[in-house]
Image (cartoon, rainbow, N blue to C red):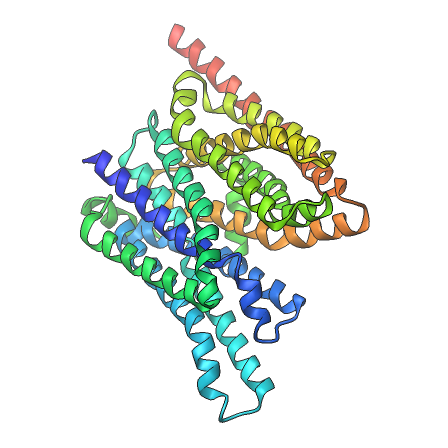
Length: 420
């Protein structure tokens, strides 16, 4: 039964990310066709991450109270409506063109585009709910492997989606949006018919009785200051900022070393495939053999090395080599950090705390494009990689002081107590 539910969650996350990535590369072109400037396109892209920053922890906490299944249904329905609005923007423009000035038409359409991305962002933080579902149906020994499947589904969606979206765009930029809406509806039906609730009625009742303060900036600060989960969230934030700098600046970097858009797409697909192999095939064996803290600190070192090497790479063959340790360390960190975070709190807090982790990740995607773009434009293509590597060095230092050393002391204390 658990294996069938793991497969269902894998397919749900895959389809969800497939729908998202269908339109992601085409969104700037779609917006520019309605007169959007580069600054407006940047705001449009950032609006999704900003909305997810607010929505992810709320969805996670709500799933702790009423269950994972209803929140997944609600969030996927919001994603469907967001994609539908996105696809209807162009037909809406043609319909209202006879009633108002052309410039006003463009502004109205851009308003619809912003509304669609904000709606999708508010409800699109359901990856944390899917992760919470995995923690409900796995024990601590198998949790990293289960969460690795989520990461693999995430990666597969990003590998297939952009290519499919590009192929569909030949019939119009809004066609991928309608296809993404259809994919989201299929996802909603899969949840409704095939995914049972992971929390028992007794667990939901107990969680509902617990009173917690509303999610605010202070609540986020309190989570970051908690002794066990706080250091893990800090590492998630610093690692997320470093990796988001790589992701958001990579296309500009690739352009600066002379890669075509097609070659850039192939390199990103190559990274995605390596990440999927790591999270679907290797992470289970690694977590069975090594402690999660050991995997975390070594993956941080490997990521720091890979980002520093990326900073000074200017040829395609070198880039392909550098991407190997980067994809491996990224796949390990994504899985091990989420697993460790879920184990550091009680079951009644898992959804909320994973939502906070997703919110921190969304925050990095709001900030990283501006920081990385400034560094690349003002200092050169090496600067974003060096900045990201320095963030990873800080993460290593922080992890040693706040996670690794306290963990060793706890293990020594536990061994001494068991020997008495």
